[in-house]
Length: 125
Image (tube, rainbow, N blue to C red; front, top):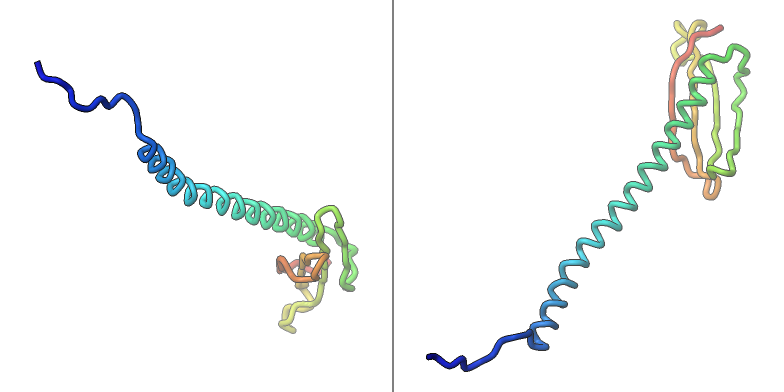
């Protein structure tokens, strides 16, 4: 019968440390991936909310007959934005009696930077 020279019933301390080091090295990029994905999702969600908000006001402007042509400002503190709504005659003189240019701007309340701008045309009523 052969005698077993070394008994390997467990792991040595070095093997455990190397194992934890490898797991740590692999977890760092994976966790950074999750953090980056979360940040991008937050930004996409915010942009989608702003786009939806601008579309709502654009539809309201298209279907409201008695809108004056003065720019109008609407402040929404809960969304931390300011909506600037303006209507002007079409730039082409041949179309200006029939069409109006609608512009919706969404601006950040804190630093007054433009977040989104939406343009459309509507018929004169």
